[in-house]
Amino acid sequence: MLIDENAILKLSNSTIRRFIKDYKFPCKGDRPEMFIHAIKSIYPDYDFIDQVKDFVDIVSTLGENEFKDHGGRIVAAGITSINLDKFNEVTQDLVSGFKNIGKDLGSKIMNPHCDGKEFISFDLIKANWNVFKTFAPEVLSSTWEEYSDFAASFTPYPYFINSSQIRYAIFGNINPKRQQLLQQHVVQNDLIKNIEELTNTEIIQKTSDEVIIPDNKDIREELKSIAQSCRMPCRMTPFKINRIGQSDYYYQTFEDGKIKLMGVPGHLFLQALKFVQGKKVMNDDLIFIFEGQAVKFCDPFLFDDPHRALRMKREDN
Image 1 (cartoon, rainbow, N blue to C red):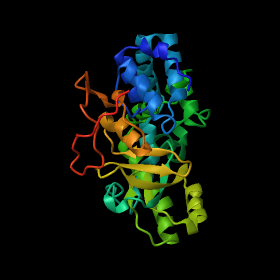
Image 2 (cartoon, rainbow, N blue to C red):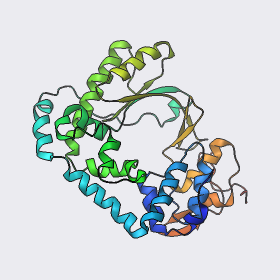
Image 3 (cartoon, helix red, strand yellow):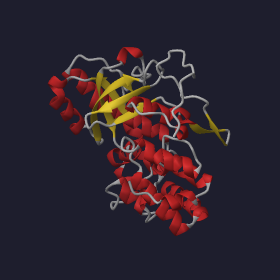
C-alpha cells in the first residue's frame, strides 16, 4: 500500500475533512495520524488508495487554500453550464404524464429477519447525471459523453472529476425534485414493472435510484437483462446481509469477497470492521472525533452484547 504518509502528516485537519466529505470516507477522524490509520485499516474492503494519491497530489500542486476554493468554483461553473429553464421545459410534458410512480419504501434490509439472507440490488449509476443524458440531452454539450467529460470541462484534476460530492453539489442545484421524479419513473417502469412481470417477489426496498429484491439464482440471467435494458445505466449487484453480532448494525458481503458496513456510525466504524473481520481491536481504533476534539473509548464496543455494554478487555497496540 503506497501512500505518502509524510505529505499527509503536513495537512491541516480542515483539509482532511474536505477529503472525508468529497469521497464519503467512512471514518471521520480528521487528524493526520487518525486518517493514515483509517486508510490502512479499512483496506482492501474500502480501497481509497488512488483517491488519496490524487488528494495529496492536488494539495501539493495548488496549496491548501486554493484546493478548497477550486472545488467551489467547479460547482458554480457546473451549475451555470446547464440551462435550468430549458431542462424544466424539455421535461415538463414527460413528468405531467407520469403515472403509478409509487412512493419510496423505507429500508427493510437492516433487521434481524434479513440476517444471513441473499438479495439483489438494482442501482441507477450516477443517476443525477444520467437523468439529463436520458431525458434532456439537448441541455448538455455534445462533447459530454460521460460525466467525466462534463467535469473535465471545469477542472483538469482527477480528484475533483471523480468526486461524487462535487457531482451531488452541482446537480443538487438543478431542480433535484424534477430529477428524482424522472428517476422514480425509471425505477417503477423499467425495473419494478419488469421484475414483477418476471417473478412474484417482494420489493424489499425502493428509493428514487435503487430497488432491492430477494435473490433468485434460477433467474439471474433474466434479472440481468432487466438491468441491461433499463433506459438509464443500471448496475445489478447480488449480496448477502449479515448482522454485526447482536447489535443494530449490519454488513453486506459481495461475490468478490469484499464487505460493506451498513448503518455503522463513524465513531464505531473501525471497531465494527475489525469485529466483522475477526481481528483484534487496537488502541488507535478506539479514538474518534467528538465536538472537534479527539477522544477515546475506555473499552472496545461489545457488538455481541444486545445491551451494548462497554466492558470488553482492550487489545492495545
